[in-house]
Length: 236
Image (tube, rainbow, N blue to C red; front, side, top):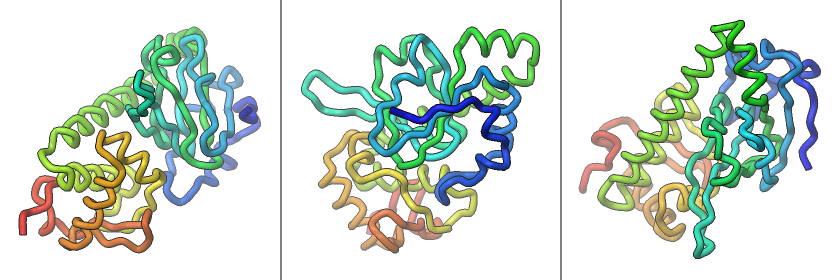
């Protein structure tokens, strides 16, 4: 079970101790703090089930770490719909808890939760809260649209190149810097919709082509744009 606390016990200064792969987001912390004691915070460890965050139509968001949103098919296969990091909201639709599974993907993941009724009441009095939520919802739509484009690439190597480029941009604002992927290759495979062996072969091929540099299996950097054309490795 997660450890839960009221938001009042987590002033912005104390929540900023985030893992290196999570961007610092003071606007998000200010938004969380402004909502007051109606917000519940919860700490999760890797593989913890987080379905309770969106139970009864509640709204949740990630403050640090990462949460997987996935669907289990009748065959037993898992399909990851989204990987949510600091600043990403979920539970945007009322039936999220019924349709999808939510699971912490990293240790010491920190999430926030508010009932839809409480949020609507506060947003009616403070339009700036709704504006911030609306902006984040639009970012969610843009992120999912980008993922559709990733899946639309022709070859598995192109898919993984686009995926890693997109993920690198989410993890670091500095182009070409090293990033530590907070997800496993199994997660990448279930997110893109290909076999994990195919993911490994694609990463090996991208490294061979000089498109990426691998410091460790999870720590990588994207090479300058001569190795990529619109997010797709050039044929050599």
